[in-house]
Image (cartoon, rainbow over all chains, first blue to last red; front, side, top):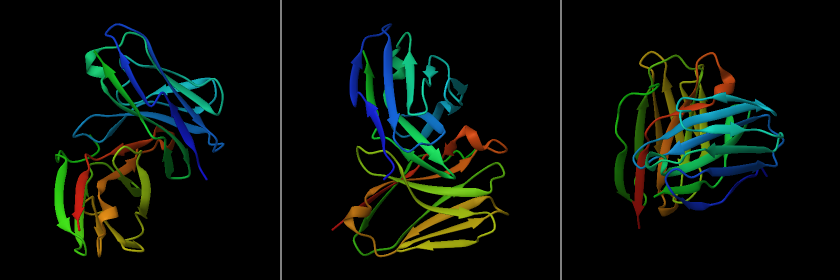
Length: 110
Length: 113
């Protein structure tokens, strides 16, 4: 079965600190995505990647970097965390039309 | 936004009732996907309908697509408490398959026994 895992599942960070969210997939999918979800909103695309060592900006990339060191791993990096980045973050991989989502990481920035 | 500016909607119904939720989108798409997100989980695809299909069924789920009005609906018949979730419609970015999905705001469905 398709599997996307995320770590950590929950994190509290301080304003101005660096945060790295990790995603690992065992699906052998080329495409991977990072979304954020805010209360009362749908998911919004931050960054995506269709091949290792390459990333692309999504709809809301400001304040975020991404890294895809291998096909299986995709990280989201907040160099200077801000209060407005408090949200739940989802990673996904894709084959065909379907995206497979991880369980999410709840990030709270204080 | 790809989607209309609807707010997150909330529906409360009793088990056994049917429910229908709607989405409208602004730009051309060839596929509309519906995802279900249960509390504390990531979204999961439940049904997909293509532009050459007006209706698609899967078990108790029924999706419709009207490309002329750029709208889609999802119906669940004979709801169960386990159908409690937020339901999202989503489309691919036009002319850019790799870019990922654009999600609507969702409909929160609460099914009570």
